[in-house]
Amino acid sequence: MFDQSPYVCRVEWGIRGAREAAERGDIIIIVDVLSFSSTVISALSCGAIIYPYPPNLDGSVYAGKVDAEYILGRAEAARKGKPTLSPVSFNHEHVNKKYVLSSLNGAFCTWIASKVPALLIGALLNVDAVASIANQVRSKTKASITVVPCGEQWSELSEYENNLRPAIEDYLGAGAILSNLEGKKSPEAKVCIGAFQNSNQNIAELIWECGSGRELRERGFEADVTHCSRLNLNQTVPILHKDHFVPALLIE
Image 1 (cartoon, one colour):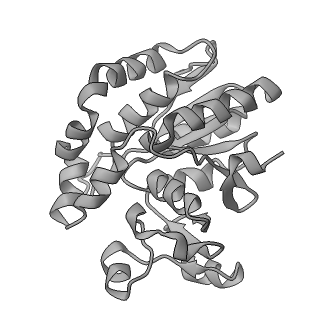
Image 2 (cartoon, helix red, strand yellow):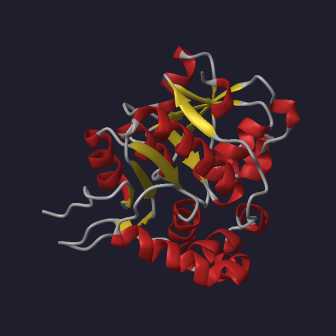
Image 3 (cartoon, helix red, strand yellow):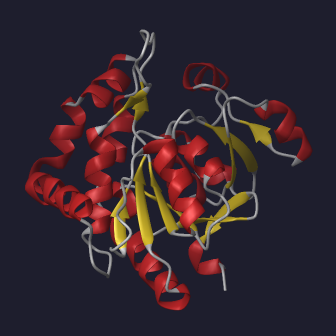
């Protein structure tokens, strides 16, 4: 059986990894650099309130129940001048406003893993801050920490194929966070850290040119790729509190 249990700090991919980490009762850090994690961090830093919701359920109905606005797709929301999954669409005009945010990867992983000692949102934007909060939570709970790079999903699957598409931006973000965590690292975590350390000097260029980065740029979202590639731009650490995210420092 695949297992990293002898180690305090682990890395697991996608929805399956998030579910298994939740079943173990680990502290979980969700990493979806392009763009769920980066968007949640950016939105909270502007004072917005974000409710994560899985895309296979009706987010508009849920938004009505929590008195929030359902975030539309990038293109549609941009036409209407509304905030989107694009992190640069949030600003201080959105302070204290509530939004329901769905995504195929980060929001889904969050939903699957919501019942844990702490579920944190990490990205390149808040590497040092999210690792610091995770270390603080671990010192109190003694729980292990699993960092979950969410990856992307393949479309148009053929028979016998699974839909997880590993994404280097999430792997590099996970490695950056793991490098700042305290505790014994699994071999998988050490390799992930090595990937980040070997790429640290040109990480923005790598993400700009990687498949996910090009995919967004070709759709006209170059600003998202640039923003999400910035290391330690933000000290905001979203933590899941019941059904929505709040800045971690507000949780006692």
